Length: 149
Image: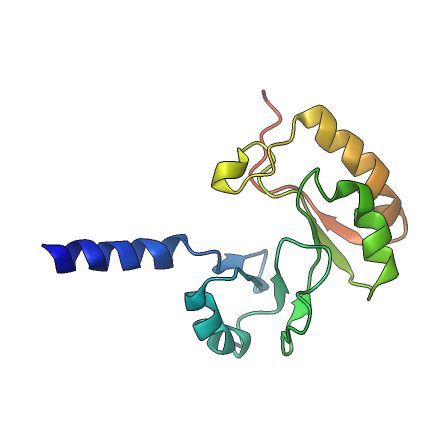
């Protein structure tokens, strides 16, 4: 029985890990990079996949020293905490054609969401993301948001 519980825990860790292959429209697929040991062990395999075209890590800049091979890095404005500096941080570094906005803003932080009221998300969008969009950058809509509150 102990082996069964241990195997279930390992399976749960793997299934709930932050590396997920995210399927986008068409044949474009991205990779969400987390920081667990399992993810680091499997990272070369994922980076070598011909199915993947982009990668993100919930931050406005790539992880320092991280190499993503042929994958395009996509920055993210995760939530309110880093929102006041996002535009400055984004514009001061390398330029990326795409940006992701807000991670699951209608979910609580204990499950990975950025927990933003709609009014706050709109305000941050207008101040930080809309000026970047006006400059021609493509911005992905929030993941998992429901405006019908």
